[in-house]
Amino acid sequence: MELSPFSFRLSSLILEIIERKKVSLDIALKEALKKLRTYEEAPKAYRIAIIALKRFAEADLLLKSKGMLGIPLRRKCAFRVAYSLVKEGLVEVKDIRGVRGGLLSNRLLRLFTKGELENVENLINSLPIAERLSIKFSTPKWIVETFLRFLGERETTEILKANLIRRRWIRVNTIKINIKDALKSLVERGLRPKIDKDYRFLIEVSDASIPLDNLPLIKRGHAILQDKGSVIVVESLGVKREDLILDVAAAPGIKTSLIQQVRNNEGNVIAVDISKKRVLAMKVLLKKLGVRGISIILGDATRGFFRGKFDKVLIDAPCTNSGAMRQDPALRLILWNKPGIERYHKLQHLMLINGIDMLKKGGVLVFSTCSFSEREGEAHFEQKMNDITLDPSGIKFGARGYKEFSSSEYVRRLFPHLHGTIGFFIARAIKE
Ligand SMILES: C[S@@+](CC[C@H](N)C(=O)[O-])C[C@H]1O[C@@H](n2cnc3c(N)ncnc32)[C@H](O)[C@@H]1O
Image 1 (tube, rainbow, N blue to C red):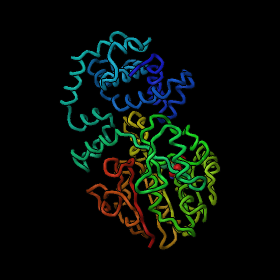
Image 2 (image 1 turned 60 degrees about the vertical axis):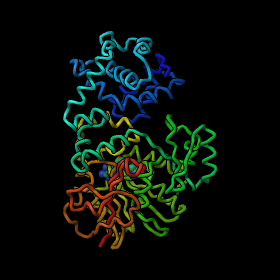
Image 3 (image 1 turned 45 degrees about the vertical axis):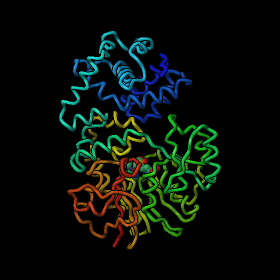
Image 4 (image 1 turned 180 degrees about the vertical axis):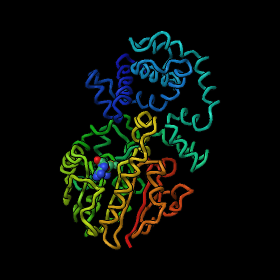
């Protein structure tokens, strides 16, 4: 790889922004570009940042072993980038020396000797298993521990490996364009689109190593980025033309818009979200996509308002996002320190109770979180809830929930290594 001082600086800054501001990779790239304005370097820096986000924990371990973990964040991020590229065999130490500017001191550069790199390898291999896998795959230890506890070592390693491979899908907005034209537009942009085997309106574009929201197709509202797992969640609702649907936690409206796409804009959805900013973004998005039949409410979905009114309720609850690392590698860094999961658990549970209340008898409720944590999944259904029966029959794909839970047979989990998606927990319930 040909490394320039600009791509080195830009990729280091992307990591720094992610860690400081806890933002996604794509947002960090935009912010970094505003600052450095080296636009032509963006695709390369983006690729480099992805590589570094999959290796940063090893770099940190090396720094820690030398008592240097406390160096300024700017330098630490530059070190992570340099380490990752050297370790992947993409550049040599002399290349780093040529581009480092003021970002890497001689002391840091001296850590790139063959002996030091071998030492890190030995150090990793001497660690207890959860820590070892966490560092090897730059995945937060608390997530690795969850996998080990419920799935065992072999499957944990499979998930962690699959999670390193970024798969991305574009959902063609068939309200506005047909699939053939969408494919043509993607090919014209130099991509190699592949129609998904299960959903014809989903096109896989995993070969793209650029932010995809700049594609003309997306800018015009002819398509939207959506993971296949998110499509499976919506499909579990079994949307019918005449259904009155409540979508709580709806913004920015990716799932809401799919609900209307599958029934050709017929029927009505009440979409609720508590965030003013996200509701605004939702309004813009739905307009751009040409979606109709949505009434948007800025409100708190933990408080009831429409008792027993809806045929279907979708609760795509706010969560840690720990299932989405594959889509957004920035989450590896953002979630490194365990976030407050209990806060999410409580909020999700209140939404669930309230959602059940708003459902008609015989109606269907789908509860989903893009999380690997059992507290954001199975734990919600440990005690029998009045009024509902879990019925996974409408969830087309997914493995059983984590063992040890009484609900595990009746709920579903999507995993990167089994389903190719990001991680999702899905429960589907019928109101008695
Ligand atoms: C996972 S996101 C939803 C994504 C959305 N379903 C989609 O597909 O585009 C969770 C959403 O829950 C919203 N939220 C958080 N607390 C809420 C509450 N108490 N009531 C309603 N919405 C809430 C957040 O603002 C956020 O937009």
